[in-house]
Image (cartoon, rainbow, N blue to C red; front, side):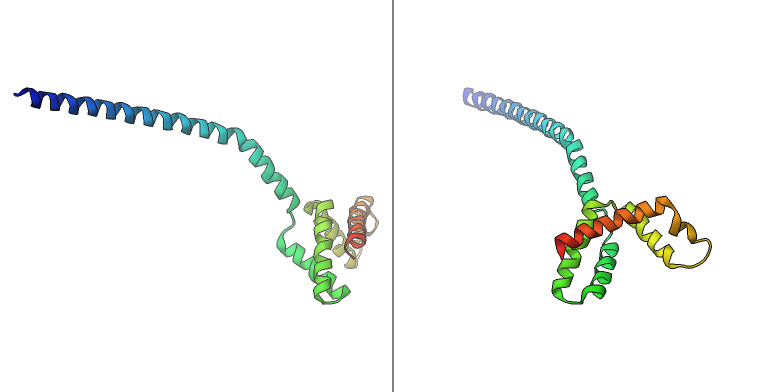
Length: 148
């Protein structure tokens, strides 16, 4: 073997070792950065979950419930573009004041009051039912002042 061939092999092996070391270092750095990124994402996860629950709380009314309210409002107040905007504003304000569960309960009491009979007398006289409806009426009154 000549000295030039031996030098070429040594140089080639040295370059391969350096390349492997560089690759190992690169993988190691990426792994560390990935772990750091994962740790940062996990640390921020409760905040993201909290933000999602805030968004859910602000938009807990189903679209159909909002649409029903807007349709009924427009039938009462006029079927114009202006009333669409005002009625939409109204349900949005009610949604910001009253959680959907309480809105649904009050609407149920109101619909049960329209039905006659002895069994429905509870919905007309019970204090709990009165309080549910009163909360809805207060929210509707505030929405009327702001939006109309």
